[in-house]
Image 1 (tube, rainbow, N blue to C red):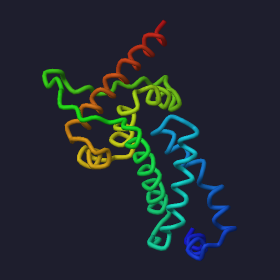
Image 2 (cartoon, one colour):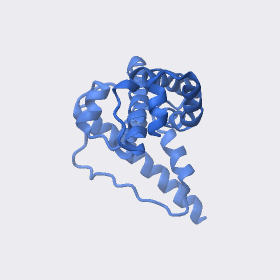
Image 3 (cartoon, one colour):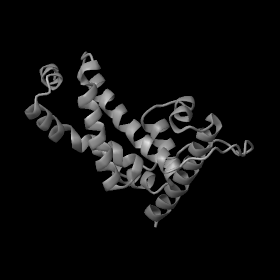
Length: 178
């Protein structure tokens, strides 16, 4: 991978093409997870690769995981930029603190694809916050900064996403029992 990065830093177009062919499917899935729209995801990936190639000279290679994380972060940021432009997020300050925090109960009979589809069916703002928090590991403070909302709004979106997913899981478990 280090040799590939050296070639990318030299703007080698053949290497750029091969690199795009290799990594675009993975980065497309990352983008799609946020926007739930193939056309927007493709646009995000293309802009992401533009930024990757433009900024590759600033990256210091140490290992593959770090490099893949760097690329993923660029694509996630592009997806969030698009979502902010669409004004998907509003600050929310109401939360029912008397309601216990919803922990997801899992069903071992469901596949990863089942869970993926359930997440994709969440409202956009809940889906985005759930992805950032539960899948990509961002804190509520980081999410709030990225989305331009209050930290409490991030918590509310996550709580609503968990409740919706728990409801979907309950429905799926009932279907499996019948």
